Each structure stands twice: as structure tokens, then as C-alpha cells.
Length: 262
Image 1 (cartoon, rainbow, N blue to C red):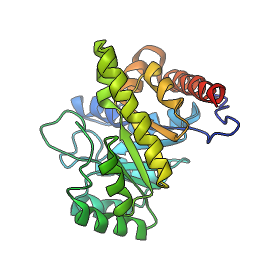
Image 2: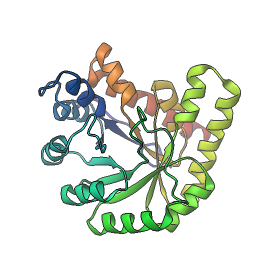
Image 3: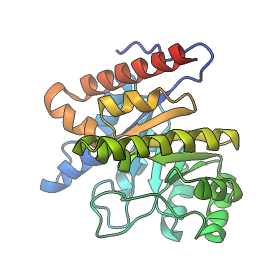
Image 4: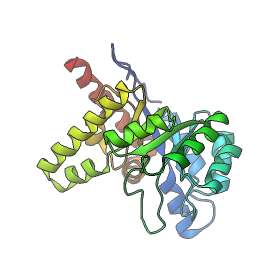
């Protein structure tokens, strides 16, 4: 069991949500029930994860309806359901009642979520969706780019939480584009600070690895990271429990940097 000492004096603790979508991707490649995403979720929780994230897509390319039901029934930690803001998905979320629902954009052709939700353009629809989910006792977050216009729109539609899309920055880090990386990270930091000033809880995710998670964890406004693909890949080498423990250690280092800077 991982010992978690992420509470830094003067700063909010930072949580780790583990996305288990790609465990289901591997299962679906061959069919059957192995590997089981619910079992993977239990391993992640035993290693110290604070919550489990699962994305139920329209085409059910990885997580399916049965997975969502079993996760909700069997997990001893909160379930965060990523979903599009469509009538079908909203109805499933309300019927399942996860702890949280993160609304994300979704296009069938994309391999993964390729950008933030356009809250400003879809304000009326999202206001209704946020209201309906909140009325069912589900905490709503919006997966958006670190853009002030989108952050203000998130407040306007009544969402209490945003999750900042870190993908553009992570891509720049991976490709060694230092100049672009500096610009993108500055956007993330500024967006997190702006959102917190407006009273939003700030999460972050997409494309994070040990190094980039450590850097984002050093932002004091960010209280949760949601990470999936990298952890499942690392699990092939060190096991899922080991990957989660290493990620928590990276987050702990980042929070320590935030403490030293405060």
C-alpha cells in the first residue's frame, strides 16, 4: 500500500484519478472478460489512487455500460464518469449516479479526446446538462482549454469544477519544442489561477507522464490530476500498482516544489 503524504502546509492536497479506459481497450481487442477494468481499478485504489475515471463513449470502443455499472457497484472510491453532453449519455449518468461526471467533447474519428469542450459556443445546452446532472447529486466538471473565455463560460453554466486540457503542452514537451512548451505551460498556470479566482475547483489531465505530472502538481491551484494512457502503458513494465505509486511520488515532488516556492 502506498503511503500518501501529499498534504502540503498552506496548500490543498492533490488527488490522483486513474483512468482505466485502455484496460478495456486491451480486453476488447480479443473479446471476453480479461483484462478486467474493474479489477484494474481495484489495484489502482490499493496503490493509492483517490478515484477512478472511465469514459463511456458513444461507440463503446473501450468502456461499456456493464463496466460502468460494475465500477459504481464495486468500487470503494469515487467514480468519475467522462461523457459527452448528449441526451443518451446524460441519461446513463443520471441512472448510474457516479460521484462526478466530466463533460468532454467527442468525435467518432478521434483516437482520444483532441481538445477542450467549447463551453462558450454551447452555453445554453451545457447549462441544462449541468443543471440536470447536479440535480441528480453528480458533481460536474468541464474538460476545457486553459482559455479565460472558456473558463468564464464554465462559471456561467454553473459548473463547480473544470479540468484543464494539458495535451498541447505535453505534446510540446514530448517533441522537445521548448519554446512552445513554455508558452503552453504559462497558459495552463494562468488558466488555473484565473479559474481559482472565479471560485472554480481546478483539475488537469491529458498526456501527463511522471515528469509533466510533477510540474503540474507544483501549481497550487490544481487539486486533482486524471491520468490514464501513460499509467496503463507503464503497467506493462512495472505493474499498475507500481505505476500508480510512482505517479503519486512524482505528484508529491511537485507539491513539495510548490511549498518551497510559497
